Amino acid sequence: MIPKELIYVTTVAQYGNISKAAERLFVAQPSLSRCILRIERDLGAELFKRTSEGLKPTFAGEYYIENANKIIRLYKELEIQFSNISNMHMGRLAVGTTTHLGSFALPKILANFTTRFPKIELSIVEGVSTGIEEEILKGRVDVGILHSPINNHGIKYTVIHEEKFLLAVPPDDPINEQAYFKDGGEGPYIDIQLTADRPYILTHTSQRTRQVTTKILENAKIDVKPRYLTKSIQTASRLVRDNLGFTLVPLSYCKLFGSAYSPNYYFIEEQYQPSWELVIAYSKDIPLSKASKEFNKIALETLPQLYDFPND
Image (cartoon, rainbow, N blue to C red; front, side):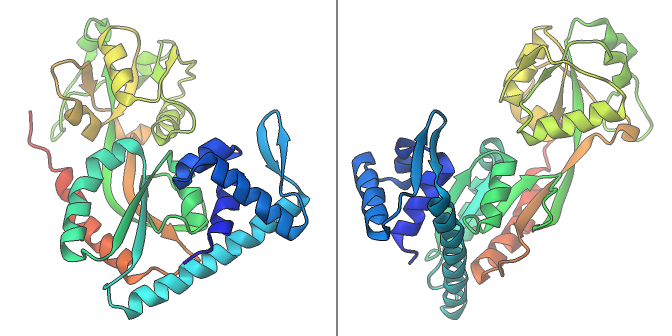
């Protein structure tokens, strides 16, 4: 078991706030404050200083946190070895993903995994893709279910599925009249360059959907200043439905949202690289536990089936 003092200090450093750290750790805020003060007293050094931006590590705090993370990773490696030795009769597995992808991908995978390995303790870590990548590198997440691009060289990944992005168009916009079909195509197409100088509704730059959208627009040489920003692709789609702009939406999201209240969706030519990949990601430097390997195997079996939607 990882010493709780190490987890407490590194979590406070991560959030820069005692109350948020206490919430994440499921401990009372006064208890966490007392624990930090006791650690500082025992060490004879202050680990954090209060600033207008929250708690920041002191020089001693930075040294403590750096070495605490090393120790946590060593404990994780020790747990991995014991998990393997016990042949899946005990163990712990942290799975990281984004909120939307988790709601779509995790239920079936977790149901299959817990049926086969009921004694492995599973925890779910949710956040933006870049945050999950950081948690993988720190050893706090064992396996991530994410979308590409994965730009961190410390992370390995296995591609499960490639998915198209579609252009969402307001139903009353004249651009709809320029839709066309292709032999062997999956549906109607529109030239995305027709949306140059038109308003877009985009997600935030920290979100993978925005990063992929930016790449597509750059490939089309479209410079967009978004009219609205939202964290929800569904919200963006509904704003498009109300004729407030355009957006780009992954195909699976379009089908999950349904057609009762949606804009018109169109495929985009391949030259703009309108796609992302669903991947299973893990650290290059931390060996995969047997639990992680079995989870990956189940995910590889399960996830492609989730994208086999019936046609509307």
